[in-house]
Image (cartoon, rainbow over all chains, first blue to last red):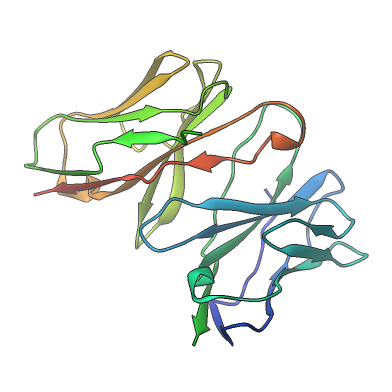
Length: 112
Length: 116
């Protein structure tokens, strides 16, 4: 899997947008960008994934740069419950290999 | 809609004892994964199954660890004999093999294992 780089931590105010960056400069053409998060004492939770177009769902938006070397996960209105470790992962979405390799992630702290 | 169910939630036992962790994946899912999470090593994949067949067990730390999936609705991870360094949170996850759902892994709440 391509390596991803995330800052170790960031914080934002409740109600504001949280923009979580991820660098994946060695991403291959068939690799997708996935985001998961892990709230304390829970299992990881899928958030969103994309290939090259921007994606949005009920949880977040994913912005991928045109060269695909970096991306940003956007939580439009962060709440205290969004405090968690967020993992950016790149991997192919084809074939039998469905492994996810988790790095250290970025710890998001949402302050009141 | 039941998610991935793991049992027990907590397990405390003495070193040398056999430990069995259990997982019930989401009905209809084709893949099942076992992960281990520690402060030092983070979240690591131990083994995964596709249609009940082990596909990749390269993450299993040593022969003391074994995993089985006798049917589509049940899997076990066994440690025998257990050692203090096996203390960790063990997660089970499942996913579908088809379409956009591929790689959207659904995780259980984990088993927190403490070996004394």
